[in-house]
Length: 456
Image (cartoon, rainbow, N blue to C red; front, side, top):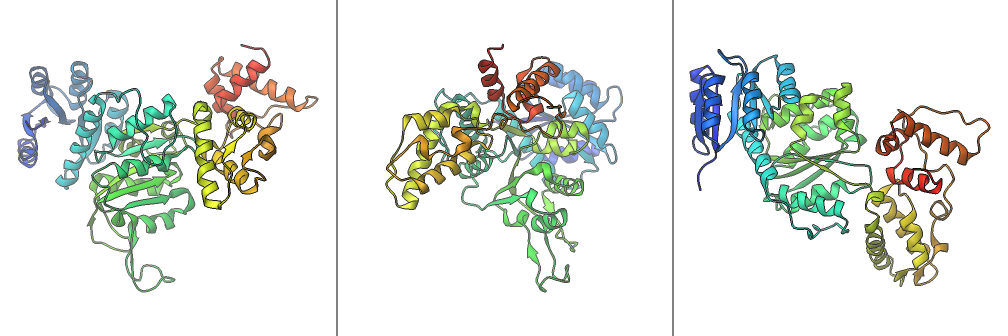
């Protein structure tokens, strides 16, 4: 099989030659001294799979080359090289010009750079690979046949063989850790460790020592021996960082450095330790919005978002509720040693009509509770929790912090709920998804309410 072809663009001959020699065993390397020469090579060599370009060059800058090359080849991954201290320029190139990654000069770790190139090529291969068939077998641990979940199954199977970083987004309780485990189990790293870290559960200092480890004597209240961190523990396997949107700005910088260099230093240490892990990160927050607000580093966001997966909330996969409920019924009936074997039709209908703000996790907990407390072999509507059979009229409205509080004086709860939804829709120009996000509820809840009120 022919080696992938890459293009190296830099006006410094010594750097061009160094990179070409380094990459030669794995890639067929073309070189150019400036953007104009590089653009001609892109035009005449459609098989070029990736380009690496410096920013400051005569005749045509790297940004100009990037813009013109993307016109010719929108799918061509391009890595920008920038001088130390020019990170803002590189991030701007990623945001506005379409650059896929950036590296700071001087390049001191060629192995880490090699990993970055490999990740970009894997991302390109992932994007160009054929779509999965209409019906995809769920990976281990998943239940569901809805189109939304079949799309996730296909993405997992396509992404698993690579080592590219994956960002899994979606509301709490939708199964983001299941995705991470499936990516690990279906990957070449399956025999290695799977290490999960709940970022939101730890303070910044504790998270740092948990991830990076610490040297002996670092903390006066610790035993004399040091501790290996999660980065080292995940060597040869997968590191799953849950709720990545909760980490502090300081930790964002440290994580970015670890991802760039594929090496760490323990807390209190000076030795550089190489680490080999596949990172899967998850969040229930909108990281793109957080970067726009300045709450999350944009360069780290691009490092994490090599391959993106968005988990659907349960109310967008209503057809899976029956499958999931029966699956959990069997699981908890067996675990508790009882003989509950079925869910009555009226009880199942109530489950399917509920909005499930807690998603699959809430459904699992409800079924477990019903099985434990059941008085017969069939779960009936009498076994359902009251919040499902008789939800509070305004229970669906849990305004997010960003939502504007509306006065309710003189209104019944139902009137206040109706007015709040209609005003949110008006503010959002009728966009139901945006209105749902503003109110902190699901789009399906808004649709159900509008149908109830006979409104379009």
